[in-house]
Image (cartoon, rainbow, N blue to C red):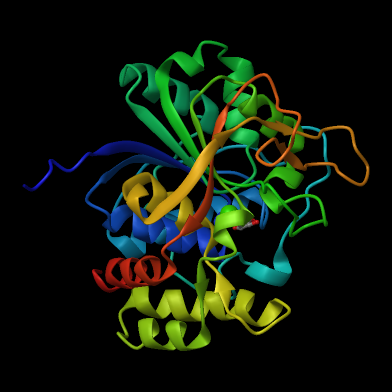
Amino acid sequence: MKTEMERHIVWLDCDTGTDDAQAILCANALPELEIVAISAVAGNVELEKTYRNALRLNRLMGTDFPVYQGAEKPWLQPQHTGYRYHGENGLGGVELPLPENVPETTKKAWDALYEKAKELGGALEIIATGPLTNIGTALMKYPDLPRFIRRIVLMGGSATGGNRTPAAEYNIFADPHAADAVFRSGIPLVMCGLDVTMQAIFTEEDLIRIGSKGTPAARLFHDALLTPLRAQEGGEGVKLHDAVAVLYAARPELFWGQMAGVAVETRGTVTMGKTVTDLWSDKKFPFKNAFVVLGLDNEAFVRTVQELIWSY
Ligand code: RIB
Ligand code: CA
């Protein structure tokens, strides 16, 4: 019996970088997801670039999603960019044209997010693939926001080690104070951390095969991801971190994990930005605030991403 496909109304909050770009392409191609807007946050590269990169994706996809600018920098931490993995332009050096006419919008991401969330009466889901500064700012400015957000699926954190420091994953490390506000918000959370995203591996052969389709989306997939592929130690392939959050939102059957208590370190020196989970601790937190994704069927994941990129 064909089950009715569940549709999700989603807001993408990204620091469009090389893997965020693939996540946006996948989100737009997934029939289970209806994107209502994209917001840009400073992260991998500066806000101006993450904003314009999201606009560039609109042109490549032939879409005109509203794109809002959010935070230019983290709440308290200095901005840590990721030029090594994303290039100075955030797309691995790939040049994409901007849309012909960019609608002038001065409305900030958090204000637009709150308006849309209230308009949708609680149906809106957020897929966050960058530092959580915009979402945290929305929570601070609009304390009743949690009433209107169905869930947040975020790429970030780790139940084990880090990739920006030995303790912390980049998105949480970049703005641990905003992340702390999100993890304390009471909004249902799905944490797609390094535990699962480090398994979402695309080899150079995968990039060449997917790029061989020759379409603009296929070429972007190959060309943009060569930068992180070449930047990382070890030759096992590039991790498509952000696409994991998008694929989880649409096809959770490809993944597995479990509920846990998760808290963000905001004062440590060695551990700043660490997501402390109680998954394997004797001592548990008195709350379970996030579904922590721990594994995926990577063959199905690669196949699905390929289908989505080739659908353009
Ligand atoms: O740690 C991986 C995350 O950091 C991804 O979102 C990537 O885009 C970078 O922002
Ligand atoms: Ca990102």
